[in-house]
Every structure is written in structure tokens, then in C-alpha cells.
Image (cartoon, rainbow, N blue to C red):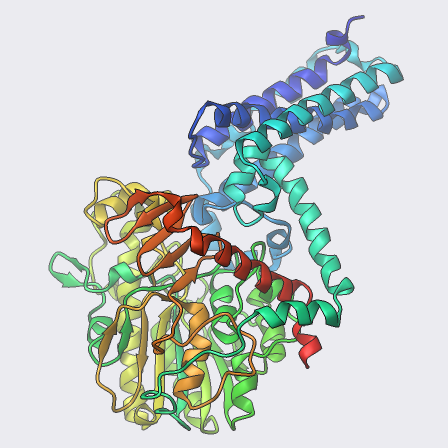
Length: 611
């Protein structure tokens, strides 16, 4: 009996999954190939996992082997398909922390449904074929394999994996240190080798807190800036005033002053820019935690994690968050959100960060008529929140989290104040209708603030939490932006989100400073006349002349006054022409260092040593 007949069933399963994975790489994922070696890696990487993976089947008895081969194939296919669905919206790959966020799935049913296509049945056609063949054919490999044959198959798998890893390291030196760039990891290692590596990273991060010491904290914290210069003209101008924060779900900056058939998409925000400090070069810096990451960034001035959401993975860490700082200065703090209180683990981490009250879904009258997607629509959300807001002890810090402008961007026709954008891509087309609805909801909220008497005694901050349209919609977005195609430079520019800081009695002003969500904490504390010199943070005051114009995104890209760096390419602003990497080199190491230091603070729970 030759080796081929001994392993016939396994060879069939490997071949089918290998071919399917490569097709998925080319069709379902956007993995740019720069040269022939990368194409070889893309073709090879499923095989290096599959051969070793199916060695497990050889450990079973002949009677059970065919059944195990089928179930191994099913598990592999299911995980591959789960990555495809996740990628369709986030243009990213699953991580272990994300898999443990399954309790969120029930709240995002509409989005998941929108991402599953009828044609997805073809992802599993090979399983039907495999099941039929395994049932109908008497595979000679059902005979018990000798230990020497098992070792040969195992050594073959090890040899393929070794060659694969060598080629991957040649293609991208120090590959395994680029944990934040999952696209490069998947392209080089393969989906399943990447998942194994992710499991290793999860185990490592879980150990960091247990092994952390006061010495580790001192080493990191000494290098993290604890003080940021303020603007003497603006420092303390809002001392004692209420602070109201409004998170605009999925709102990107390009919608401002945009028109469809002569109709403004954001008429209220356009007017708000004239009466507020409007930052037109402001970026979200979120990771896989999206809205929860934006909250974490703003309240802590720490970066989100490269994998998963801090709200889920480290809710009981010691933080020095905005609510806690403001409480020592006489402030009461509350969050308003018309959704399930446990979504993103908010009911737990809000207590950790020092919030006094969380008005979640249970405090609102939510019906089928006034809710959509993830909870209460924005207009009734603000209306029902006002009685609670007016009763808060002053001064207060109140955060409002809107919901309606969320993928898949659904809104009743009677509540559409603008026509959908004329493009075949439904996600992009509908996006403008829900942005317009959110804009109208915000206008009404401001009117309610004025009629309640709170407006003149409150600093109101309005910001976009993260992108709304992912890279999967490049063709439609190129049409929206009147461009022939979108480059990597354009994609970074699309991470701009609006930021308005409305201070009573102050005239509006557009500020071109490059900044990000991580800068809001020291900026707002200084406006309220609160020092930040004893705080551990990575942001700097956006109003300060000494503000550091280096905005680092969670994927390692960054933006400066003159350059944008992404996908290992340096682009000069404002035209986006590639230039030599030397232009960006002074910032590359600094950007990586900031992300690494912030990660160590969170993984090791290092702020507990300061307390």
C-alpha cells in the first residue's frame, strides 16, 4: 500500500480546503500583493497549517477517522467563514478577545444579517462533496496506520511550515513583532496560523498583569508624559461649568458641508462649526472596540488595545479616568445610552472609571416605533434624556451616546430628511439618510438645552466616534468624493471625524491642528481649569502652542502636520504623493513606542501601582 492510498481521505480534505482558502483570499479579502513572493506565501500558507491540522485524524481509530476528517473540515470552514463575515464590515480579522464578546451579537442582529449573503452557501459546497465521497467510497486509508507513517505525515507538515515561516520572514523581517497589523500577519502566515499566534498573544497578555511589578510601572511611567502645556488664554475659561459630551455614531468628517441634490447632509453641524471651536483635522483612533474604544480614549487618554476592546478585556483595571478626576473637583457624572446596559460591558467599566450614574435602556420607554437597529432612535433618546439631565447635581459631566447612524443605516422613509445617495452600494447610499437624521436629532437637543437653561452654563463637546464606511466600499466612496479611485492615503484621510467644542460666550473658530481622540482629556481638563500634571496620558492640549502634532492610529499609521504614514509608505500632504521613508522616519519609532507603552500600562494594570 503506497503513501497516497494510505492518506487518501486526508489528502482529499486538505486539497479541498486549500483550494477554498486560496479562493477566499482572492475574492473575499482585500490583501494587496506587491510581488511574486507574497503570492507564493498566500498560496502556500493554508497548506502549512492543514497538513499538521489533519495529523489529528491519524490519532483516531479507523472506524472514527472519516467522521473526524469531516468535522475537522467543518470547523476549519466555519472559522474561515466567520472571518469573512467579520471582514465585510470591519476590514479586519477575528481575535480571541472579539470571540469572547458573543453577548454583543444579540444586539447587532441587523448588522450581522446585512453581512450574510445568500451566495455564502458556496463556502460550504466542498463539505457536501467531501461528505458524499467519504460515505460512498471505501477509502483504503481506513486501515490502521503504522507509527512510521504517522511520523512521516507529521514531519512533512513540519517541513512545509518551516519553509513557509522562512519565506514569511524573508518577505517581512520581524514579522511577529507587528501584532497590530493583522493584514500583514494573515497575508504572510495564513488565517489559521495567525489564529494560533493570536492565542499565544492572548496567553502572554493574560500573564502580564500577574507578573507586573512596581518596578515595571516605574520604568514605563517615567517615560510617559505626565504634563502637557496649556494655552494661558483659554485655561480655566469654563471653570465650574457643566461638561456635556455627545458621541456621534459612525460620523465621518467628509459629510460636513456635503450636499445631495442641493440639500445639506448636516445643516446643523455646519452651523455649529461657526459658533464653536471646530477641529477639521481630527482623527478617531479606535481599534476593534469601536465606540467603546472612543469612550476609553477620551476618558483616559490611553490607546485602545490592538486586539479586542478594553471595555471587555480589562474592565476592572485601575484607571485615572475623567469622571474620577472631575469628581475630586466637585462634579457629578452620568452616561446616557438607549441600549442594553451590558453591551460592551459598560455597566461594569463605568463603575471602574468613576461614573456616578448610567441611564441605560431600562430608564427609557423603548417601543417598536421609537427604536431601530441597536436601541432608541436619537430624537426620542434626547427627548427622554432631558428630564434626567435637568435633575443632575451641577456641575456635572454628562456623556450621550447616539445610536441611529449605525450600520446597516436603516431609517423609516418618513424620517428621512434627505434622499439616499444615488449609488448601487446600499450601505453608502443609506448612510447619508441616517447621518441627516442624527444631525436633526442634535439640533433638537441643542434647542432643548437652551429652553432648559443649561445651554449657557455648559461646555458642549460633539465628536464622531469612529468611521462609518469601511474600506470595503471603495468604489462607491470614490464616487462620493469625486475621485477616480481611493488610495491608502485617502483611506487614512477618511478616518477624520468631526470635533466641536462649544464654549459659552466664545466665538467660533476653525482650528487646523492635527489631533486625535487621545488629546481630548487634557484639552477639556484645562478648559475647566483642572491641572493634568499628575496624570498619566498620551495626549496633549489641542489649544496649546506646544501641542504635539503626531496622531497615531491604532493600526500603526500616523498623521503629522506634513505627512501621512500608512502601509509602510510615507505620503506628503496635501496631495498624497509618496516620498522617501526618511521623511517619516523620525516619527515611526515614536508612534510604535507610544502604542507599546500604552499596551503595557493596560495589560499590566500598571496604574494600580501609582494608587
